[in-house]
Amino acid sequence: MKSISATFTSKGQLVIPAELRRKHGIEAGTKVKILEDQFGRIVLQPITEDYIDRVMGSLAKGPDLRENWGKEHRAEGKHER
Image 1 (cartoon, rainbow, N blue to C red):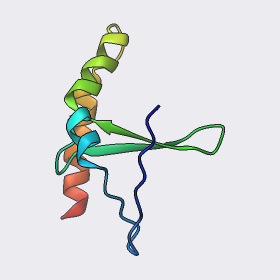
Image 2: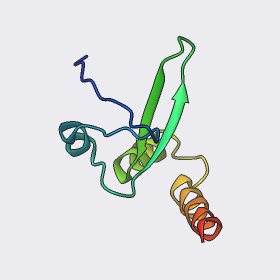
Image 3: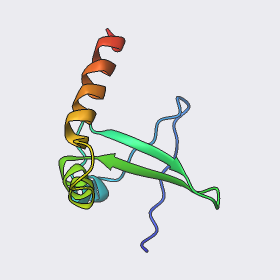
């Protein structure tokens, strides 16, 4: 695993290095899932089309995650206004 460092701003913002943004398809407005694992590590999972497609493939007979995500995204937009 490659180690890359970044620094939080006084507002709690963190800039993801351009190399990683390009590699993972992260653009302005990309949502991120924030998880904490059992070792206390913070994991950032970008919610991109590629991620949704992979999850949908592993849950082919499960719920329509893309539609659920779209509903959540629209609901969040209504709350932000």
